[in-house]
Image 1 (cartoon, rainbow, N blue to C red):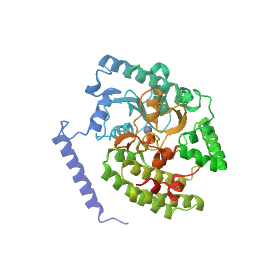
Image 2 (cartoon, protein in one colour):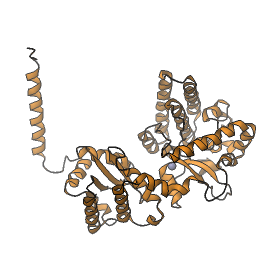
Image 3 (cartoon, rainbow, N blue to C red):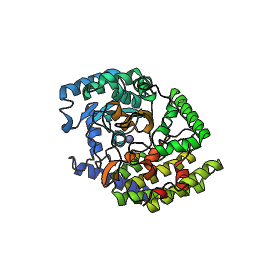
Image 4 (cartoon, helix red, strand yellow):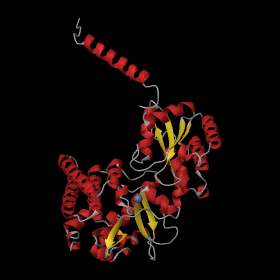
Length: 419
Ligand SMILES: [Zn+2]
């Protein structure tokens, strides 16, 4: 009965559009209009292993064929995509983005994509549906396994494929990272470490005994959460925000920090639920605004992001959240706490770090560290005396003993450091 008079028009338009698309396809059969993602997806039609020519010495054709044969034997939708990842490339240097794009160009569906990681020889894996074969942890586990140190890409990828096939990624990851999680090198109580880091937190800890107890409970709870295999880190801010922030210059970083402060304020005001949590988010919002107004450099702007993360953690309602990466807060949210000893110091700290930094420390490489200026020279920000820098005193949240960054700013501990 109801014939839609617009329907023929639509059909005609659709026809026109599809023949136009057909025209485009036939008009440019070459690779001129082919996106990098499409090019890789097309290559994966022929072989499950794609290696960019620039990496063909790291994984030569014979090794590629061997990996492809191993993959075929698993009967799993595993693909290996090795392309160099650099900031500012088609994938923003992010393995996840590369995997997303290639998966999309492959037409979606179940898939496991093994790529390079963000650090040297590390590998990464994306999986659809998420976690069906524990592929992400399988790839991460390889970076931590002692016998894989310096093993080279082909062997590392082969190992990851073995673990994915066995479906034991989570267990292998737990096993390979077990020694990162406890004070196994030094028989120290984790709860006693944070305040040993700097004179200011120590004084505060003395004044706030009960708070310390709370912090210890927090650590215990975190450990328990880890035992249950949960990564207690809801991504408070999308990774893309940090990826963009890391690339930005100071002015760009200031703009982005400003945008995120506004967003946090809007979300906190619109939020419903636990009034105390909303209050904490609003406090973090106010503190982020205070720091942004007076920020004199990248360390302060990173502090704005740390405060935003604190506010968003409050809004997320998650009971256990980690702060941003201690070594470089613009790496984004930390993945776990690890024991770490600053160079030339006896005491060991527990700091929250991102996966990249954990891997660096694990393999005895120096993690990328945010620098500040001390007497005109760039130094790791945490080497600035704690009384001159709220960020050195708190490690952007890692060294807090039960209180919050927002509370510190409210009490004037940021403005106090301004000269
Ligand atoms: Zn990091």
